[in-house]
Amino acid sequence: MLKEFQLNGKVALVTGAGRGIGAECARVMAEAGARVMLTDVDLNACTQVQTALLNQGIECCVMQQDVTDEARWQEVVNETIEQLGGLDILINNAGILDGSLVELDSLEQVTRLNKVNIESVFLGMKYAALAMKPDGAAGKGGSIINLSSVAALAGTIAHSAYGATKGAVASYSRHAAAEFGSLGYGIRVNSIHPGVIETPMGDHVKHTWVNLGIMPDEESADAMVKSMTSLGRNGTPRDIALAALYLASDASAFVTGIQLSVDGGMANR
Ligand SMILES: NC(=O)c1ccc[n+]([C@@H]2O[C@H](COP(=O)([O-])OP(=O)(O)OC[C@H]3O[C@@H](n4cnc5c(N)ncnc54)[C@H](O)[C@@H]3O)[C@@H](O)[C@H]2O)c1
Image (spheres, protein in one colour):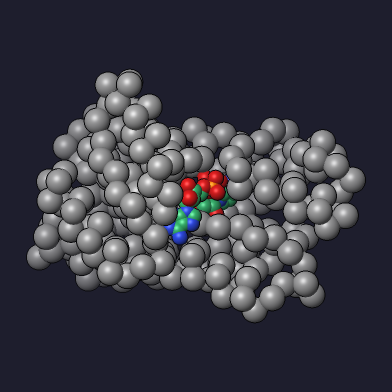
């Protein structure tokens, strides 16, 4: 591998790493040479990912973390630096989806989405930046990658509240990129915008359409998603993790504040 794409000597923290995109991001970061801390609200799931990686000869650490808990963010960042010797990469991946129509959404649903999808990104960027900036406990700058969505860039039925949270993630990322860059922190911030990916959350999009009577069955919902995608297939967690590797590595050293679509062309249609 070209040296610019290698992560040897770097430390990565990945949230929501118990399954799906987060688990694959953790695997790819480790395969590229990083020492990795995996966190998830579901510790058992995270430990299963850790065991699978250990069986492949890849060592990594795990911590239980609810990304909405501010005190836990401080502990996780401190422990990562203590156990792994630094912090160079944060992948703010943990998120939830709760699809519904605007007229059926409740304020409680919208508030919960905002808390998990937006506030967690704020907390992650805050405590990572404090650690990564020149006088911070890690002190070497770094790369922060926030998981947004195609839903931030294109409208679709029954996902407005979720899409709004992901729009906020994109905007937060652009502003933080400008701020950290201007302050000379050496911290880059970019957002990734997946299309529909083969994970439990990706399946949830199709369940929502069927449950609301928008599509007759899962098969038709899947066909609809593929017809909305120029490349005619669902994405895989690996598709997203490889984009994250680019943004995490020195190969993207001059890239900050971008919205990287990894959606098979969905946002472009
Ligand atoms: N799958 C898709 O089609 C898709 C599309 C666009 C964007 N995304 C985004 O990518 C990210 C990962 O998606 P995924 O498909 O892997 O989701 P997923 O639902 O399959 O997995 C999400 C993980 O996050 C964890 N999590 C949920 N709430 C948490 C909390 N409060 N604290 C800590 N961990 C928590 C879950 O336990 C789970 O392990 C999310 O931010 C999602 O919005 C996914």
